[in-house]
Length: 383
Image (cartoon, rainbow, N blue to C red; front, side):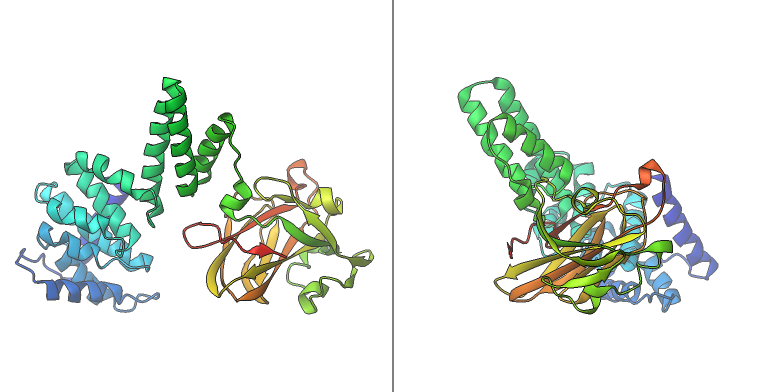
C-alpha cells in the first residue's frame, strides 16, 4: 500500500477517534447493516452534509469481517467521494488482515459481473491477484471488450505481447495469426499508445489502418476567421456564428466581411491546423462548423484537443468552455457530454488565439472526435 493511501487511512481513523467513535468490536455484521452503512457514506453532501454520520459508518464498515468485502465493493457508484471512502474501508480491512482471509471464491465472480462499478471490479482484481497470481492469467484474456478501461488495457497488453511472440517465430502461419491478433487488439484498444502499437505492427504487415474511423475524429469542417480577440476579449464575446449560425452566410470579422471555407483534414488524428488553412492571425477567433447525421438519439461525448482557448456547442448547447492558452495539448483533453438527436446534428467549435509572441505560443489548432463514455467511436455520417 502506498504512503498516500496509508496516510488517508490514518487520517480517517484519527478523525474517528477525535470525534469520539470508539473502535467497534468486529462482529458478524449482516448484509442489511452493511447496506445501511454504505448508504450513510453515500449520503455525504458536496459541502460536508452528513459528514459525522458518514464517519461513524466508515469506522464501523472498516471493522467488518473480510468476507464482507464484496458487499462493500458492490456499493461503489459514480460518485468519486463516497467511492473513495468505501475503497479506503476495503483497504483498511485488507491491511488489518494482511490479505489472509480474502474471500477469493467471491472475488472472481464479482470481477466477472460487468454490472458492478468499474472501479470496484478493478480493485477486486487487484486484491485477487495479490493472493492468487494465476487469476490474472485466467481472467485477463476475457477483458478484451470490458467496460472497465483499466481491465481492458491489461487484456490488450497481453494480446499485443502474444502477437509479438508470434511475429518472432517468422513463419507465414504465425505471421498470419499475429496479424489477426493485432487486428483484434486494434479494435479493442482505447488508449492511444496501444492503438498506435497495434496500428504500427499492422502497417508493417502491409495492412491498412484507419485511425480516423477507429477514434471517431471529425475531419470535414467549414471554417471561418478572423474575429476579434484583442486583449482576450473575444472568448466571451458572441461573434456572428454564435448569434446567427448560417454555414452559407458571411459575417463582419476583425478585418472586414468574411465567409466560410470548406476544409477536410488528411491528418490521421483529425488535426486541423488553422494557421495553415486560414492564415496566421494573433488576437483572433476562428469557428469550425460540422454536421453529423445520427440514425437515432443517443448520448455522445465530444472530446477536444487544443492548445488554444476553446468552446464547443452541440445543437446550440454549450458542452465545454476552456479559457486556457498554450498550456499543452493532447487527445481527449476536454470532454463535453451531450445528446445526439435523430437526423442532423450541428457542432460548432470556437478556437481563440491570443497575442503572445513567443515561438512556443504560435500554434492555432484543434482535433475533435465523437465517442461514447468508453472512448468507442460514434460513427455518424458527416454532411
